[in-house]
Length: 261
Image (tube, rainbow, N blue to C red):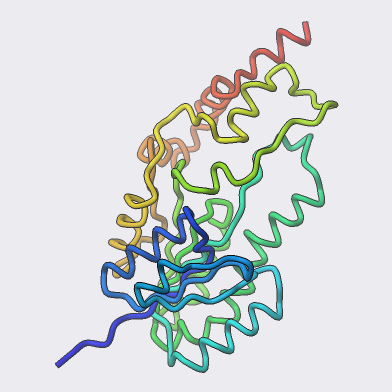
C-alpha cells in the first residue's frame, strides 16, 4: 500500500532564492512540489527533478487567476502553501521612494493576500498548512491563524534573521543626494547592498531544512536565524531600548549627532 505524496505550493522560487531552497528540501522529503517564478524566468533544474513549475506574477490578478485555474484543474487540494515571493527595500523612511514602496507592498503584502485568497479552498480541502516568510506580515499571520483555524488550516509565520540568498544582491540601492543620512552613507549602503550584515547569515539550505521540519506540527511563529533567541527575548519582553542601541551601533548613527554639531 502506498501513501499519496503531500502537495506543496511555493511562490518565489527564482534562482538562488529562499523559495528555491525550500522547493528542493520539500522535494527531498517526498512532497509533490509546485514551484513558481516570474514569467520571464525558468526553473530547469526543478523541472528535471519532476517538480511542477509554473509562471506566476503575484502582483497581476490575471496571472494569479490562471495559476489558480491550473491548480484547481490538476489538484483536489494542497497540503502546504508557502508564500515566499518577495523583494526587499532597505532605505531610511525619510528617503523612501513612494512608487518603489507601493511596488514593495504590492509584491510582499497584496501579492500574498491575492495568492492566499485564491488558493484558500484547496488548503481547506486538505486541512493544510500555510507558511509566510516575512516578519512584516506577523499581524496578518496571526489573523489568518484565527480565521482559518475552524477549517483545519494551520498557519505558521516565519520570523527569520539574515539568510544568504539572491535577495541580498539582487538590487543595489544608494542614498539620494539630499539625504540627511549622508554622513553615514558608506555604512548604510553596505547594509543596503548587503555587503555586510555585521552578524552571521544562515544558509538557504539550513533555513529550508529547519522550515520543512516544522511543517507537520507548525508553531504559531517560527524564529530562525543568527541571534534568533536574543531577538525573541527582546521582542517578547519589549526591550526596545536595547534594540535602539544595537541599530545605532550597526548603522553608526552617532555620526549624525557629531555631524550636526
